[in-house]
Structures are given as C-alpha cells and as structure tokens.
Image (tube, rainbow, N blue to C red):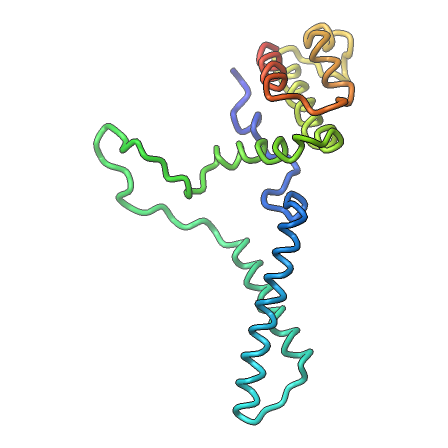
Amino acid sequence: MSTSIDDLLGSGEEPTGSAAERPSGGRARWLLRIVLVTAAAVVVIVVGLRAVGLRVPLWIIVAGVLAVLAVRRVTAALSPPPPPRAGLRSSGGEESGTWNWSARDALRTAINGWERPLDWCVDNRERFTERVLPRLGELADERLRQRHGVTRESDPARARALLGEPLWTFLGTPARRPPTPRDLAAIVAELEKI
C-alpha cells in the first residue's frame, strides 16, 4: 500500500480540542470557571492590597487577572510534550502488556482526528456533509491519483468506473443522514479496494 497511515488518518483542517467541538455545556462550564477563578483572584488581590493600604481601580485588577489567565492558557497550549521517561521500556524482548493511555501518541492523535468529527456528526447530516464527506472524497481522490493517475475532477468517467456506482454516489451526493458504522465500514472497504 503506498498511502501512509498519517495520510489516511490525517486531521486535515480540524484543530484538536477547539471550542467549536465542545458541546454547548462545555463552553458554558469553561466560561463559568473563568469567571469564578477571576473573581476569587480579584478578591484575594483586593484584600491583600487593602491590607497594606493601597487602592487600585477594580477594572485594572480584573484586566490583570484575565491577562495572566490568558497568558497561562496560551503557554500551556504551546508547551512541548514532556520528554519520555527513561527506563519505561524493559530491555527484554517482550513488552509489559500495559498501555500508557496518557502518553501523546501520533497514531492516537490521527485517530482522534477522525474519531472526534465522526462522533460529532452522529446525528447531524449537515456536519457530516461539511466535515467528513470532503475528507473521504480527498482520500478517494488521493487513492485514485496514486494508483490510476486520475481524480474525480480530472477524469470523472474513469474515476466513476474505478470507484463503482455506490461509492461514486455516496461521495457526490450529500447524505440524507450520516451513515451507520456498518455503512462507513463498507465505504472504507470500497476505498481500500481502489
């Protein structure tokens, strides 16, 4: 197979962990947390400043706390992953049989790049049509290009013959409902046959 796993499972334009993927309750919870942390920090700072006899306008303190929280969030998002711990792997020929689920793993990230949009689109046809269907079309075009030197756009007749009528129709027509996992497995199987 000439297509790598990273190509097949690439996350495309989907940023991981974005606010757009959170359910509405997650956004409200996040906002409530920010407000509570800000209020607590402002109260502590105001009490501390008043204890030493200083008075600072409240809006300056609130702005300062929000700035510190924003910088903290940005630096946490941009920090590199922690280095692997020495001695985690045994020097013997066999692995321990346990999996470190908290480790940052490129394959897990790639799988999440598909898992999250698929999970997000379970009951929403528009989301599936906007997010997942174009990715599947890109995969089909890439397989066609690599194996046969055509794409759906460059030679539609030949691409249609190579894809087969069910796959061609699925990729070209917006779904009335998102496919079931069984349907999606059949689609992926057809893509692998190209």
